[in-house]
Image 1 (cartoon, rainbow, N blue to C red):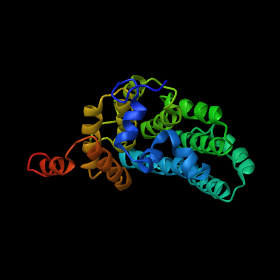
Image 2: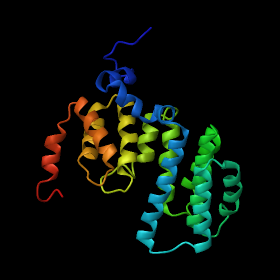
Image 3: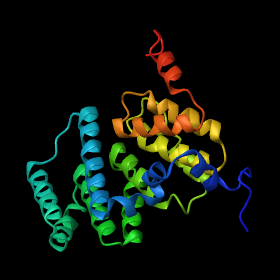
Image 4: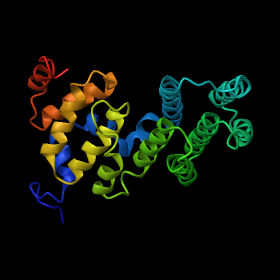
Length: 240
């Protein structure tokens, strides 16, 4: 028997009323089905690249030239569909003494596992990176976001909020991705006001990727949040 639409325990029905089917399909629980396995792999590799950039910017270090070239060659193999060869070449890099190389290799292995529909293997890699305190924080954060994305439907909404709390803040490099996960969790809990404010915050933050900003603006509007007013407030002196 279907639940009445006003009952908070039916968050999916409430969400569907406020966000059109196209936006709903863009959310995380159907991301893989809509965009395909290879785009997920591309997203993982993109996150790896961004995480690497953030780390080098912070620490001003360099990878060894040999391992850097090896990773580049492996990415080429992945792009050309030679996954078995790429997996074999990644294995020794996962044992590298270079933390950057080790993290990047593990995340690439996770991307390959996702392409092969091996969700559990991918999650194991993501959690391994996220929980390895010896790895650079940007890589651990990227892995935590991807693991949470894959597990979103099976996690309690409050667990998602708790996981993402350190990252879902303006000024954090992962604010857009972590903020979307957090706002989605708020919606599942029926906390539309919190979700709307968070979407509006993402929509007005110029450091958030444009695709996320645009999506956040549309969803915030469906939740009754005036993003235009929020943008005007953010542009006031002292709020920059």
